[in-house]
Image 1: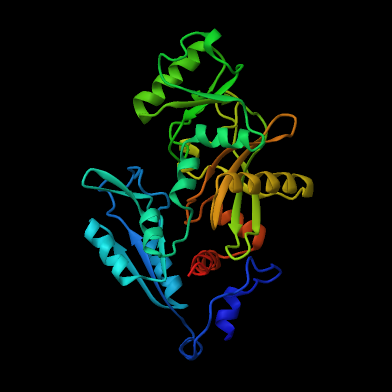
Image 2: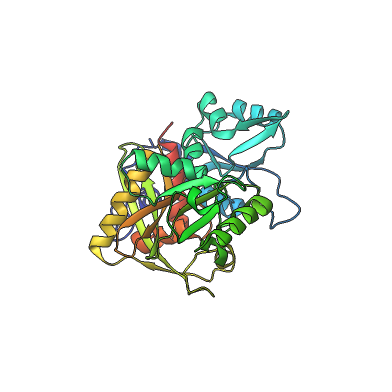
Length: 356
């Protein structure tokens, strides 16, 4: 194995490798310094309004940067925009060794076609979880019910829409409550009014989420402790999970609560630090690994956790297609494994290629 390949498919300095190398090297690989694999980076047309949320895209990619990284190490790396079912059929005919994409699904002929379902049928490896797991995590109420069934600690909760819980007696969880949309990411629909202490605040927030987010509401016990996110890498060959916890710190809002809301995320106003307490690190890692398994996650993902005031970690939600720019997943890799952005992208690609 040449030095370049060894560098990226072995361990980084002071870090154990996340998985061994199972990619066979051909003579051409050794001579060219590149691995003879074909990778297609699949995208969809971007909306005219760059701030618009594309619900069918789980990971917003910097595709040109990713192509640049992968092309240093793999023989053929291309970017393909999918506009029609015919484009997908052409992809299947090309039969690449890996599809690197954050697209969840397409709408063709009035029907929804999930990319990873299609790739499974074609026998083409991809980088993230399959549709079953994505369905489990995308509905936050369903994800929490799965956690309860698996014996994983999560806050008491229920889901609602305007008119379903009109009185305080009809609410099964005690105030204060935390309310957010059942579906959607990036803390959309979360603001200072998401923590409610009475029926008036509850009814107003549920109505707001229905009107603005077009979503049912997830209502749960408000947890006032520290907030964490745990990146997960899976070794596809062995099933071993590596957990990478980070702590997210935000300033108090006008109501005296520390809420990671939409504006804070959009403006990068939070701080992210390493989890240095070994006992807390283990608690978070154990819960995140159990949650990832319960959701049937694959390859990589992120699990969000809140502490109660008594220091008990609770599952909040999961993201099995976490952002691959420089968000929480990358920062988890950096703070826990001293991994560069380039190394993170290469790890994800190599993990996907193990499937072929």
